[in-house]
Image 1 (cartoon, rainbow, N blue to C red):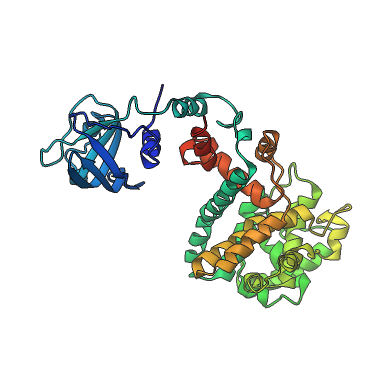
Image 2: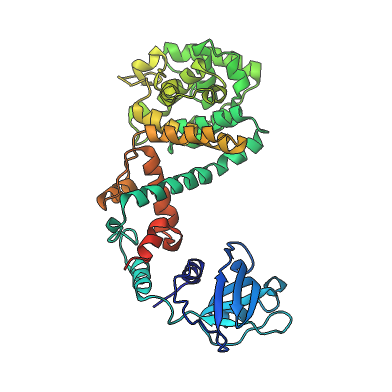
Length: 426
């Protein structure tokens, strides 16, 4: 059977091996008083361990390998960071190893001490070819344990996704409003038009938009003009009016528009055309500039959702989905679009703001907002539902995405609360 060092770490950390009458390779009796603190960074695997060899108590570090000779292959003999290793725990002993000062390190062999049920369960998890390693066994885990682990994984996902916000905040010198504006714009374009939306926001500062927030036509002129949609000459009165307005504003603010070819329409429903989304974005700016400052003041999740649900583009877009192209269009934001903005922008910013400010109520508010949103419907959530793990809200579906990506796909079962529960089952 193929073992991993991660399994040895797991067994040692939780003492999941026979500890009755333990002996070192040298024949001396050994007792594990404290296995140490798991070190996931450079250096020995466990720090501050305490063991008794014969009648002497030792305190220091523990290093683990599949074979004793791995110590030399990893270059530990010449590394002074390993001078305080008091025990070398291995699966197989094939060579004596020494510290930097030439003293030999005591060796404990785990082979033969690992319970049969753990070996069998580990083999099942690592060697099966199911959709996820525990697909056929997860039904044996009680729902409370699964939901508790999903809650923990959700926070992990929010922290991971927040890393991009850290970069944005640095770029905008700590301005939450400006960072939020750029991220909000990007998510208005979804995956298809996220990049041009972000480029648009970066080319059109909020300070300019704020000066025209009471005039929706001027906002549309600025936004559509910067997006590159007003460069052509069209036989459309509204387009002409916007173009005339934009030419004046462009000169006033010394603006440089994007190229229109950046925007994609192919395989999009008309309600998701970039022109419709840009018009909705203009309506949102008109309704509330510097939006983040207002969002963090709203404690009621229902009120927060209405900030976006009530967005409706100008009347032109009730009968057009592109300039000069008549057709019935939905100029208001649908529930799915609102949920997408809340999930991918608002939740993240409220969560990260709470983390940075040390205010737990904002973290709780972000999670409460997620719990108020409908669960996502994709291949991963459907896959979990098929094996009996269903989610009733977006908090659960986000946790499932993280679980699949960070644990199941990489077979990190030993780091997963569900996997470790299964590993110990008889």
